[in-house]
Length: 114
Image 1 (cartoon, rainbow, N blue to C red):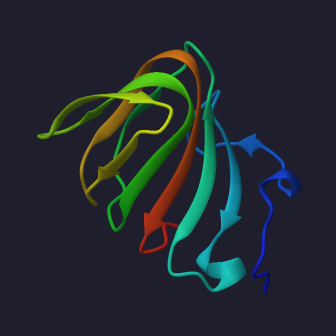
Image 2 (cartoon, rainbow, N blue to C red; image 1 turned 30 degrees about the vertical axis):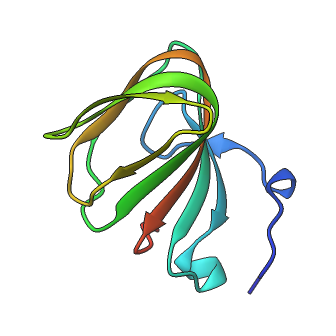
């Protein structure tokens, strides 16, 4: 089990569901016996993350770089920009769109998503 993972040591890999989106998987329940899943997510300018749901996990997103919009069903539309932090409650439809600058997000899922 690793207790320290440096982001620069982890390679970007294609997201398993969303074309054009990449992730760096930093912590998982399986690999670090973690109570959360932590990934970095990269969404290129002009791409989007279609409507989806995390059935069992809240999703907390801290925006490290870029600009986009996020719609959270029943809650509203939010501008995502560097320094923003958003929470998507579990089992809530949401999407990222209108990516005007490449988006880099520090994504936390609790309880663990994978």
